Image (cartoon, rainbow, N blue to C red):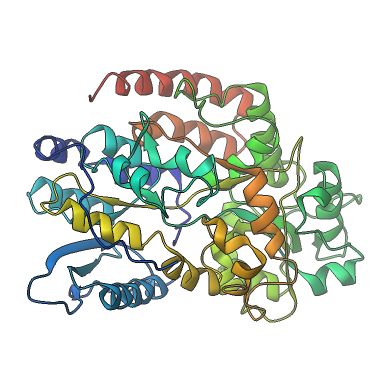
Length: 480
C-alpha cells in the first residue's frame, strides 16, 4: 500500500468522473451470490506505465483484470501474487493493469467507456462514494459465507468492518493497514541527552514532554534553542521535529485529543469541536509558534527528503507513515521508531486502499476469488517484510505470525509493539462518507489560512465546516 502525501487540493482527483460511471454500474447486479468453488488456502519513484501483465492459465479459465497503482515494489508484489494465485488454481486468469499515473481519472474513464476492470485498487477517500454510486460489487454474501475471510477473528475489528462497509454491506476488503508513528535518529537524540521514545503506547510521551524534547533538539546556527534568548528562527541548523499537516497525520493528532474529522453516526465534519481545534492548532504551532518544526516552504528550500534530513543531522524526529519504513531503514546511522506523542490518549490514524470487485464485471465469482486471495497472508506478508505495510490479519500478529514477516534488517527493535499493541488497540479509522472529496473546495482555503498563520484553527475551521457539511448533507440524499 503506497500512500502518496498529498494536500487537500488533490482530493478531487478521485471523484472527478464518478457520475460518469454511475449509470453503467447501475445496470449491473448490486448483490452477488457466492458460487460453489475451491476457495484455496493461502493462509518513492515514478515508474512508467507498462503493458498489461497476464498470467498463464488453462484454456477454460475465466479471464479478469486487476487495476491498481503502485511504485516498483507494489508492481512486483502484485505480479508475484498473480503467479502464486495461478499455481493454486486454474479456473481464473488475472491480467494486471498497472496504472501508476492519473489512476483515478483513468479508472473512472474506463468505467464511463464501458470497459471497467473486474477488480481494482480503491482509495479509502472515494470508497463510499463509489459504493453509493453503484460502481462496486456487493460482496457481503461472499465474505459472510467464507470460512476463512468471514471468521470473526480473522481481521482486526471493528476497524476492518468500519472501513469495508457502506450501509451495512461489504464492497471491498482492505489491503493492509498503515499508520503514522515516530522515526528518529538515535545518534542525534543520544548526543542531545534526549531519551529514546518507546514503541509501547503505555509509555508514549505526553504532549508537553514531546514539546520539551522538540525544543531541546532544535538548534540555530549559534547553538541556541527556541527556549534561549536570541534564538534565530530564520537560521535553524537542526529541527527538532517534522509533523506533516495533510489529513492522515492531522487525524492522528485530533484522535489523540479525543476528537475526530467526521462523526461516524452523522457522517458530518466535527472539526469545529474544541478537541479537534486544539489538536490542529498544536500541530501547526510546532512551526508557527514554537519554531521546532520546519514550514513547508523551508522544507522545499532545503531540497532534502525526510530520511536525508534525519541522516544529515538537519532533523531529529520525523512523524511519517509506517509505509516510510520501506526506505527509512536504509538511513545511515541508527534509526529508531516509536508511537506518536499523546494529547489525551494514545492514537494513530489507520488507513489503506481497498481491493474491490466492480459491479459491472461479467465474472463476479472469479472477481471474488481474486479479491479473496489478496486478503490471505501470502499477499500481505511480502509487503510487510519490506516495511511498506502493516498487517490487518490477526494471524500475522501472533508470535508465529510475526516470525513470517518481521525483518531485523528493516524493522527496528520492538517494532512489533506498534502492530500488536498500538495500531490494534489505539488505531482510529477516518470515516469518509459519500461525496467527501467534494468538500475540498471549501476546506482547503481554511487549511491554507491556518498554515501561514493568517487565522487560527478556531477562526478558520468553523465556517468552513458549516459549508462542507451542507455538501455532505446534500450528498447523503443521493444514491439508493
